[in-house]
Structure formats: structure tokens, C-alpha cells
Length: 445
Image (cartoon, rainbow, N blue to C red; front, side, top):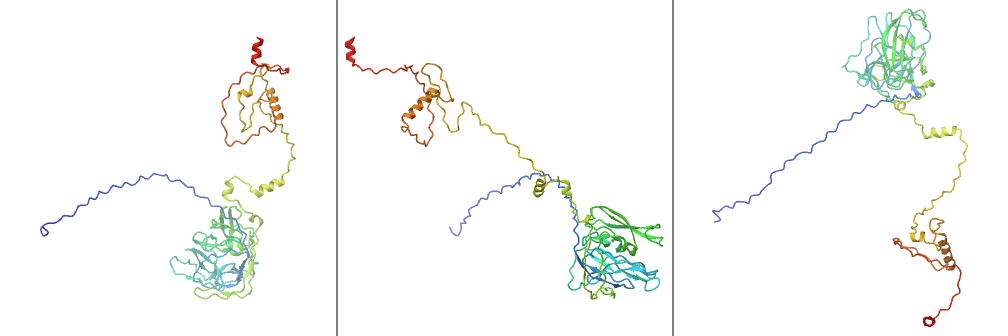
């Protein structure tokens, strides 16, 4: 039997899997969120800044571009002296790279060779950095060539102990530094060849938006003598960009010495160089020259720029006074004399008034029948007058007979039981007669 029989294993029943239905998702409409309005940045008066002022010897050819990680500081004010001789050109008066942003002091100089022309410095915002080309003397027939996009540009070497400033804040492209007294990091877009001195007379900016437009030719000039043709540029800025909240649309001469000679808004004058000997221009890939000690520049801001402008939210919301303002206003306002308050008259309670916690008087106690058969007269709304007299007599005779004890639990009031009518009694006192026994009365009968 063991060799021929095969035992079949027991079958196990597995129930079929139940179908899973995911719960239905409720549709929730997306709420529209209105974009928050950005408040204009309040103008902060610039703090004193150290400035290294030097004379720079400009090269005679276009130098190689230099890549700098942060933006140049705002422009400084430098009023050119009168032209010493005919043909002199105002050079300098802008920021150059010498291991740090250094102020190249302006001066009158003649061309190194006849026919050479002066080319203004070049600033470009590219990929978050600044592509800088120093100003130079261009030979006759040589024009400036902007560094093309995609070429390898050497990074400017930073001198020892230099602290980097803020990066460029503005659109990419060619620009000039911000006007004097502006926030650091801001730039002003401008066409190629624009002198940085054109923004000297512009108001300080606290936000992006100021830019320089196309050049116009002006033939009639009243503030400059012996000049018949001057190229001008137009500076445009919205109210949100300027520190005083006013729009700008002004025409400025393109020539550096004329633009630098205009009246500035913020007086941030450039310091005089310590040495009259110029330093060589920076060459990409080489160590910068040794710089003199920095000097402190303290900008002078007009009073109208020191006032804090209200934000957009404060203008939209209703004005609410702070606790300090309300307290100051209450101190300044005249105080009123105290008025006499009316005397409070005692409140008259109704006749059937019951104090809280006082039990109601049963009907048989409140309206008993008097002796003479007339209606009871209530004096205080609770019991008749003769009942009060009776209660007083009982308390006078036995003052200590009844001492009420505090009840632990309040008992329910029992229903009022009718009291039998009291018979009238004669008020005259009769002498008590001796009681006779019952058998004596029977004898008398």
C-alpha cells in the first residue's frame, strides 16, 4: 500500500482579491492671488566711504578687457578748472580697476600725437559681472571695438585687503555708474561711448529705472561760449527710481568737462590725489600697482532727500495712530473741566419685591382674616399690621426661646392650608370665674 498509493495534499482556498476603488477627489477651485506690490526702497543717506584717488596714465591703444565681480561705486563730483589752452581734452574723472575700484582723477591733457582722440571708458553688465575697458588715446582712424560675447576675458586681480562690494543691480548691457549719493550696486544703462560724467548732476537713485537715451544735436547753447555744436544726451528716470520720488527727463552735454561742470544734487567731492605722479594703467593678468592711502569722502545730501517716503501699503491703508502718537495728542489737547455728576436717588422697590433666596410667604399668612371681620390691611406687602404687632410681642416675651438652625437642605414649601376664621373676642378683660363641677350644674337645673 505504501508503494502504490499517493496521498494528495489538502487544497487551500484563497479568496479572490477585492477590487479597490480610490475615493473620489473633490474639486477645489484655485484661488487667484493678487501679486503683492513692491514698496519703494527708502533712501538711505550714504555713509562716509574711503576713496583712493590717483592720476592714471592712459594707454595709447585699446587695452584688453577685465572681468570684475562687483559694480563700481556711484560717481563722485569733480568740477574741472578752466581749459588751460586750446585743444586740451579733459581726461579722467571716473572709476578704473587697479586691484580695486579706484578714482582716476580728472585733468586737462593734450593728445600724445597729432590726430589722436580720446575714448571714454567702457562698462558692461554681463552674466552678473562687469566687463571693464579703461579709457585710452585712439590713433587717427581707429574706433572702439566692444568685447564680443563668448570670448575669454581675464579676471581682474584683487589687491590684498580689498572687500568686495555688491554686484550689479540692473539690466545687462552697456552702462555708466550711478549718480552721486545713489545706492551701491545700481547701474544706469547708456549707449556705447557715453561719458560717466553725464550723471554728475542727476539726482541719486534707489532703484533701477534710470537710463540714458539717444544723442541729440543742439546748435543753440547759452551757458557755454565759443561752442556752436554740442552733442547732448537725455537722462530719463521714473519716480520710483529716484530718491525724492520725482521723475527725471533732462538733457545733459555729452562732453565730459561740460557734464562734470554742472551743478550736482549730492555734493560728494572727489579727494585730490596724494601724489601728482600718475600710475600706469592696469594690464589684465598682471599685478596691480601700489596704491596710496585711501581718503574719506563724506557726501552732503539735501534735506528733501532725508525725509522717508511713505510706502504703497501705508498710502492704501487708512491712517492709524500709534499708542505714542495718541498719548502725545492727548497731552497737547486741552483737558475739559470735570462736570458735576447727578446724585443717585434711592431706588424704590415694588411692594411685592422679594430678595433673592427669600421664600415666598404662604397665602394664609399674607391675607389672614382680621378680628373685626374687615379686609386685612397690608403695610409692607407681606403681612397685616396686627400680625406684625403679634410677632413683636412674641419676640419680646421669649427672646431666646427659638433659635433657628441653618438648614442643610432646602425643604420644599408645603401647600397652603386654609386657616379657620378666627372668632371675634371682646377686648374687655373678664374676671376668671371659678369652675363648677359638672354635677353642681345639674343640681341647679
